[in-house]
Picture: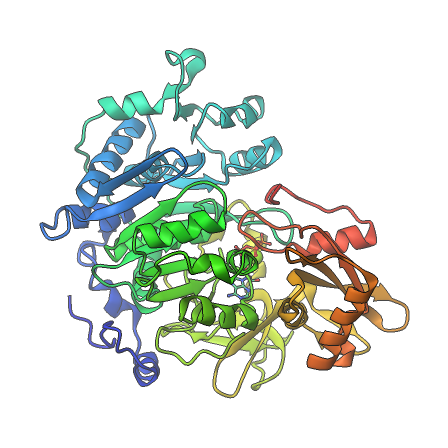
Length: 572
Ligand code: ATP
Ligand code: MG
């Protein structure tokens, strides 16, 4: 259990240690902490749940606090072992085997977590879906992956086009089914009857764990395939970056339909053995503050869109809650505006730590460490064991302060192993001299901090200048009237593109031409004349993915009257 190359995770972690850790870093040292290191036979669910349930000091600790409008429950690690074993038995009895794709299509509930981990115990590859998916989105994913089984609810099963899915043999219903009529299996009844013992299927580290269809900010969803080996990085980043320690109560607000909701809503925190909070239901500022307060959450992982909504809810509300347990706040999924970091300091007396990674990377890559000096607006630095760089379109590394492709040197433990059924798509990530090219545009400053500029496709060319939309958006949200902003390049005969901003106003502000001009002048004065939006359009809200990302391609399609493409992941 001893790891020599890493500094202790005791809250005294400092930048010197970080630089040192980077120098002689070796992932294989981390592996030695896992029980499977010697045998090579592994199961994520065992490491995340059973290992703690077998530890007398841990077994009675709450693993899961679950809360929504109608349920409030808690499960210890021993309970989690029992229920995930039961779920595994239910699946095994129904004929599910190693390598089968088992999809989970339901809203958050304890049963979602039992089913997902139970399927992993059987050795199946799980595919979590957002509850909001409609028929077309469900079909695309189940068809592409040739899913064999599905766990869903009476409401959502209506959206499953069975006629198009010949491989789908088994459908479990959670939440009531009459006498298993029509061939549907009653998940709850079976769970209750199933035995509580189960020997996990011991798989190889390179065997399949999860298939995440990405949120689709940029087009057709792709099945990103991950293996059990990813746990090494989930675990290590949970310690380093989430800073999880014994006694922590941790809340990740992401739904498991999005990679953050599995890597850091399930695997990371439970590998680290902390108490995990899951809140079902939609966003509500009151409910969210209440959750932090009620469970004494110490570490909180959320997304810029949520922080912006809390910010819009006003400074008075947050004062009504006791949030003194909070020690560490993190963000992912979208660029974190400096304005939001400053608000966080005011509201929580804590800095919000940005983290950058992707479904494809499987785990955190570029982050702000707990003790790192935060440069507001920067994503931080690559974690030890990850080499990040900015490269040009030929794959040459660029010097500091030059905008280019954010790229990573392969490989790292949690890296995707395939895009399901699409080898050429997978290969296309590595076309630039073997770099993994993220599709994001960024620069690195002379201190090694990375600054996100936008997705490569979203970068605007105006009058010969490359402008990242993020910088403009961040300035826009600094204006007191602006709640959210999405910026695109609009074709222009003279300038190539002009900058157009879509703006959702904060509560209490009215759209007007004067306000438009005021906002334009604000950006002009604070940033630069050439990046001030030439056009501003006010919208009640901006098109977003379920995971809270502004869909700039949809804004662009609206603007140009083009087809909007796949909208399955768009929030309603
Ligand atoms: P698709 O690839 O299907 O279009 P997506 O890229 O939105 O969907 P994800 O894998 O969930 O799906 O998101 C990864 C992307 O999110 C990154 O490539 C980046 O553009 C953005 N992102 C994630 N974290 C950050 C961050 N901290 N700062 C800026 N952008 C971020
Ligand atoms: Mg992507």
